[in-house]
Amino acid sequence: MRERGTELRAFFARPAPILGCAARAAGQEWLLIEWPEDETEPTKYWFSTLSEDVAFDRLIDLTKLRWRIERDYQELKQELGLGDYEGRGWRGFHHHATLCIAAYGFLIAERGAIPPSGPPSSPQLSRSAIPQGYRPRGAADPTRTPHPEPIAEKLRVSQLLANGVEPRLPPVST
Image (tube, rainbow, N blue to C red; front, side, top):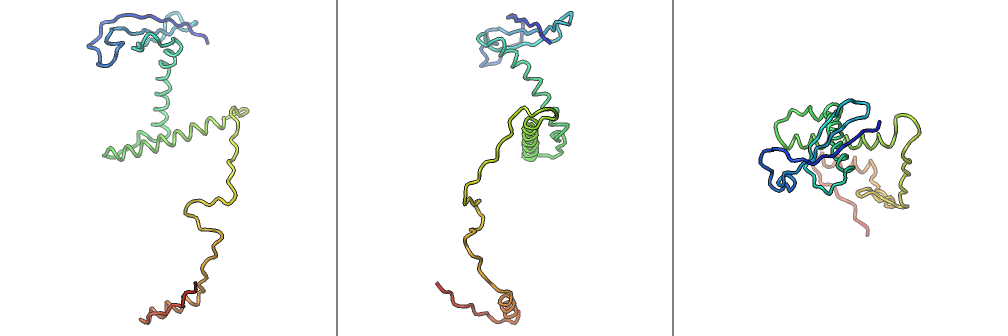
């Protein structure tokens, strides 16, 4: 569906301008009107205070961005439980919202990588090669032999400790 668009720069009576906003201070605003070809009259209207040097296509993109933000917020509340927080503090809400948004980001990435039907639109990611000899931080060294400690020795030491005798440790060889 192709839409007709028009741009109109106008001056409107408004309350006092917000400090730091040059377009409002000058009293200039854009009036955007959406008028689809199959409609008899315009369907949507927006005001914008962006400067004159913004391209018309960019102005439309920024205006339509609000719908995406509202849709994302609605999905966060309905599907991921953003609206289910019943705590009392800011810190708890912040943690809850952070986890919801992280989960939503993961779902969006998965949704883009695996389309529900049809051929995949994005190339599948290749597995990253793990270098030879890679050992995660904190993992045991695979070349180190485990210290042998027979079960019989553990049993002897535990019996000595139970009887109140200090066990003698074998000499350490270096």
